[in-house]
Image (cartoon, rainbow, N blue to C red):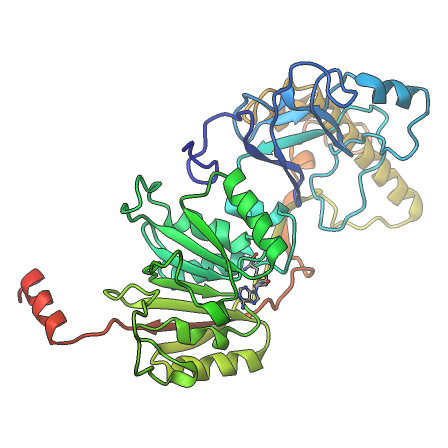
Amino acid sequence: HAPSPFLAPSPKTQPNTLAIISLSKDNFQPITLQQSAGAVDGYAEGVTLNTRFGSFPHSTLLDIPWGSQVRASVVDTGSRGRKRRRGEVEDEETPTSNADDGNDTPGSAPAKKAIVAASGFVYVLRPTPELWTSSLPHRTQVVYTPDYSYVLQRIRARPGSRIIEAGAGSGSFTHASARAVYNGYPKSDTDVKGKVFSFEFHEPRFQKMQVEIKDHLLDGVVQVTHRDVCDGGFIVDGKSPKANAIFLDLPAPWEALHHLSRRKTLKEGKLDENPGDWVSPLDLDQSVYICTFSPCIEQVTRTVTELRTLGWTDIDMVEIAHRRLNIMRDRAGASTAPTDVTEAVKKLKVDLKRTQEFHKAQISQPVSDASESKMDVDEIASTWTDKESGKNGDPSWIQGNVVHRTENDVKTHTSYLVFAILPREWDDAAEEAAMVKWPC
Ligand code: SAM
């Protein structure tokens, strides 16, 4: 089994692997890199990624270090290019420049159409759960990074953990938990490794998850089961997942809780007197940590009542109020407001000229990887001669003052997180075994 790019990334981009293309700060596109010998889809350069920042033949994205900056192709290739020149392509977006897109905010308008068609660039990023969450095809509401990073540490997810997750939804939490528990691929059926047991009752979503997990080489670490967990519980292929961590993102988590016990329990906490050959899905030798994720307080109340009835302890609820701070450079001198319109226009012209010079210098840099694309700001500034402002060679004009503001558009409420612990059961036999293992 080749290692998943999410778990053990190669140093350079490779064919047939997932890459996350960063078009701007908050705009990511997942693609599978492909090697093609010859023209594909009218493009002489083979499989090509078309964006509003230009066209990127996959051949220019392959075999380069992750994080590299890649310029749009200057070659207007293939039949589409010829058609565009003849004016026959009407609905296609003209490639534009993203050189002035550095402070792009979510939902901002596309960049202006550029005079130089192929001046755009992208970054090729290696897949991580965080980038996948930002770019995955949404089939449901998803759990975002601020929530899942907190959840995973509270449920003690670590290499070797066995996590039950329901429902799988769009797989955002699944990818993050797979990375948290990974401690190698199991070599046989008896080789117990960290694993995520994911459940989804919606057939098309289950199918999509199956395909994604296989494409991302996460099979072996993630096992997706098609089931209504409230009815069917959490046993997989007749065996216990031996879970020590649980995450429920379901509309009615309290309906599934009675399956997550050490003894066969009926709803409302009543022990079943006739367990038969019932098997617990939990690890019997460790405490088990749970988190349920619910948007409404009424759901929380029902979950907490059921948790208490079933013997869970240390129950508490948390809401993550995430704030993103946008740190950026403000133009030096921007605080001195112009006194009249003529002065304001003059200032704007000076600003525009500097920005254009800055981007021209940036674009003329040879770029093959991320480190080479770093420009020497002082060097560029020293070549300037700006009579209007008398600020010749002042690099702070490019860099500006560091300022920050809170981005108001970040949602403040996602869901309430209910945490609890089911302590391991302790009896005389367990005490005796512990005394042998760890004598006082
Ligand atoms: N945590 C997921 C993520 O990060 O992408 C999103 C989960 S989505 C909000 C809830 C999912 O639970 C839906 O896909 C739904 O079909 C599934 N679901 C709801 N009730 C279920 C049940 N009883 N058994 C299994 N899946 C269920």
